[in-house]
Length: 119
Image 1 (cartoon, helix red, strand yellow):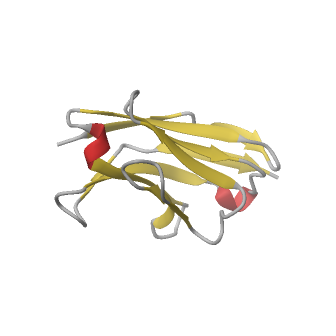
Image 2 (image 1 turned 135 degrees about the vertical axis):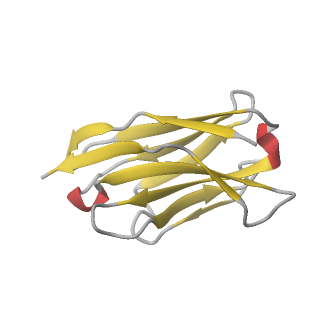
């Protein structure tokens, strides 16, 4: 099973930027599609972005399109989420996920990193 550790969260003013990182270990990183979810206080966890095994295909929630960019470096076993033009409504715990290509729908989760955007 893959082990995921997120980093890069913090406090930022509205309009600012943050880059989240997720380091994976334990299995072949390129065997996984990677993603980011988030959960705001009192709300359900929601999809943010995903990237396929090669990095050639990405997908985004409508709420972050044009502001967030997901990328991966298979040589470093790391996936990134560049977040620009942050809004207070982006405040949430952000979770990294890994979906093994051989087992579609089975996600591994990181422990999460807090992002707080002040107005």
